[in-house]
Length: 242
Image (cartoon, rainbow, N blue to C red; front, side, top):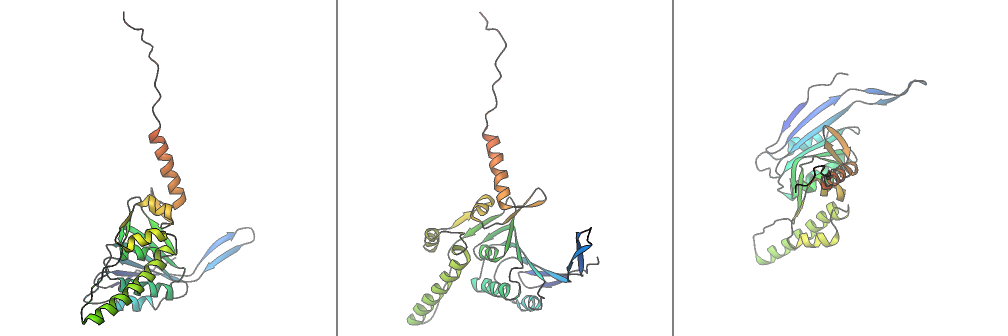
């Protein structure tokens, strides 16, 4: 199977690689000679950094993604401290428009703020043992006449709270109580174990293999049990001295 060299498209903060795969087939039943045919497709691998495109914007990246086919896959490699929520919503809209149920996200190192929300948007979410994630409320500023500022802040707050709630509360990643605590200023930091417990992570790359989050939790529990077991005391055979 010949795979073409990936095409590279850059924005200021993100890099998109596009790799094309030819049509292939997989043997399902050797006896009856039954094969499963997979049509040709592309994998769009997008490396995510900070959401703050100031110079070039994301036009070339989004334009390329909008030319995807119905069998193509979007793979997000996230290592992001966050940034513009509006830019993140652009990604969300495009994911639902062109890659519904065909988005995989990898938390290569960390995802904070908008980086965490983008990770939560994916259909399949893969982490590593030292990946970490953080949810917190958005930051915002407004300038202008008093009435304009008040109206804009009220509008943005309503929009952002609805978006945040849809991304993390409706999916069960934070409880309603925790979400309220986040809105009033609390940060929620999560390691790999916590992300697996909450269902934020669906899979974990562990010892070069991709395993389900539930299996990774069992491995951690087993490792903890072993470390807590006390070593057996061997009775002394020496006779006491007089």
